[in-house]
Image 1 (tube, rainbow, N blue to C red):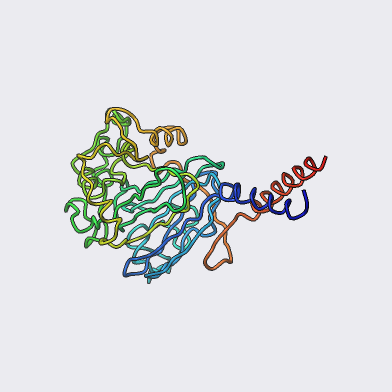
Image 2: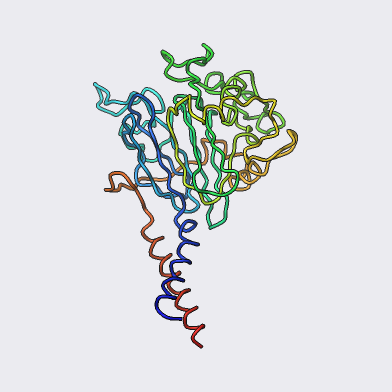
Length: 336
């Protein structure tokens, strides 16, 4: 095997393993007609993506390279500015309480629309992703999976729930819509205490309002079967305020509860059984998605990159070293 054959083998092996080794690119796209300040919170044990909070103007985008196995959540903050008295950074909705543009390891103050990810740790492993309204709603959001294999469905909430939020859940002048748990704090709405299981915590009249408008988004804590989605080897785009005349609108908002044959993973299911994606998510998190607020953590890593943010330099080095060793070994064996 000559040099060119060795190099060709190197390229083939690189193409086979490159995507799974690097994880996924997550792109944030702001289609709102106003500026937002996305927040990023890695779960405990996951590295930061390079920024935990930043400004994203209308029409702007920003991409991050998430490493294999990364998990965390991303959301939008709105109407952010320094407080005229304290000088601390505050936001009208989704504020993380850090007092700065960066959230520095703090999560969103409800109500806020959340995107949640758990990426596969190895090539061929499933990614799990969802959009959650369990902590309420502030900005329409969808997730598109691109270039992956499997069902890889678009999910999220393209509707503006602030326009038809029940008065008792409405926040301020209609900037956000709270969850029933956030307003009333009782076990039946929060799926806590005696209601801390899927058998004892069922959809409420309030969660059904969310579900009817956004059938693929989490509406309450045990909404796994029709709200968790899976894909293998994809990149993801989170779109804030997606166009309501787009294809996502027809695929997300025209569904009704009568089409219960579709689950989060895109396969048929029995309403009394657990979907494959829900079961997988549960095996990753232990017990029903860690119940949102208890599986968060992480610190801060500042990057000088202005648009594409990555913390995967070591991954690049190890990947190319491994592929080079494999290609060289195959070359030597073929020459014997």
